[in-house]
Image (cartoon, rainbow, N blue to C red):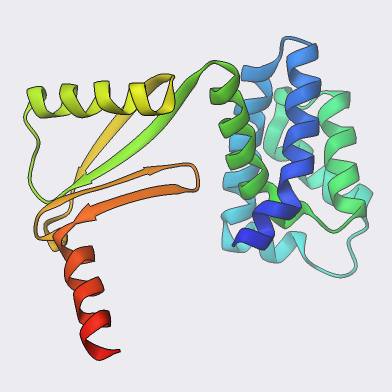
Amino acid sequence: MAELLTLARPYAKAAFAFASEHSATDNWSNALQMLSAAVQDEAFAAYLNRPELTPVEQVSVFAKVLGEHQGQELSNFLTLLAENNRLTLLPEIEEEYELLKSQNNNTVDVVIESAFPMTSVQEQLLTHALEKRFNAAVSVTVEVNPALIAGVVIRTGDQVIDDSALNKLEKMRTRLLA
């Protein structure tokens, strides 16, 4: 997974730089989301990865997916990906692009997994602490995961803060077995 993100990062940076320059970050974001979803569809991916398809034919398949959202710049981007056999990286490119977009807007998307439902006060306190830690506005999504036993797991981008009882028990088990 990390290798895929490493390969996707330069493409995401280039796409974001171009979109920012042309005040089209939201348009590119929407297009990349559609492309990412298309590539993750098994039937579409199988069709796209047929060896007899040329890069130009692969890009024309995407034109049908994007419809009116595909401009010449996006076609050029897809052609570059197709020529370098990188179309399968679109989900990772989209993820990196969104990360760059949120960094540019000084916002951070955070997913908090909690063993129990959080009260609004707890959520506000945690949100405030995370805003201080990341020095940015935080958009929080809370998910309940009883398997954690107690505590929380906080995820943002490739950063994870695991303060769950499940993690602490696993660490204890590892130490006892060593």
